[in-house]
Length: 224
Image 1 (cartoon, rainbow, N blue to C red):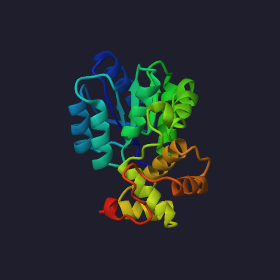
Image 2: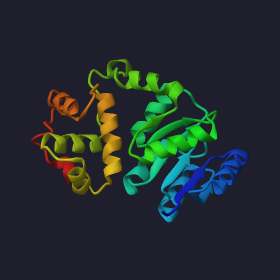
Image 3: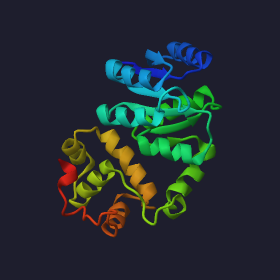
């Protein structure tokens, strides 16, 4: 089995070099790049196409924008926000931008590798000490300034296909993304719609319309 390729983006050289050194020694990993800015993250994602990209949120450039752009261009890359910030809104913003995981820098090497393994299996990972608060915040959209949960364009696309009865495999093929990425969005949808499973996501989605009043079951404009 080929090793998991991984890259690190952090503007603190000691931490960045430490991560590179650590994972270079771990069996099953191959470090393919490192950088210190949001621009570096985009360049490495494009040129190296790592399996996993760990990216700090507080560094030169717009990290959230980079995450969103990488997710759009390279949906198969696992993106983990690795940051010192324990703010719930920062975690939610990172996940909504397209990160597969949110891990605090105080985590152990074992916790970090657990996060990598979890996200590579299609799950969304949040440092345990924050997880319950993040899920609670995602389930209370009104507290975040909206009467209804806001769905991204990609989430609306997936919801529409769910309402048509498509499987994860069919959704992945239709949207040209991986099944792991579909599972990532399903996790986000369950959190946003306060659903416990796929069926509840569909039932909740049937009751919602987006802010413009568009019916996902009739509209085809987001699929083009």
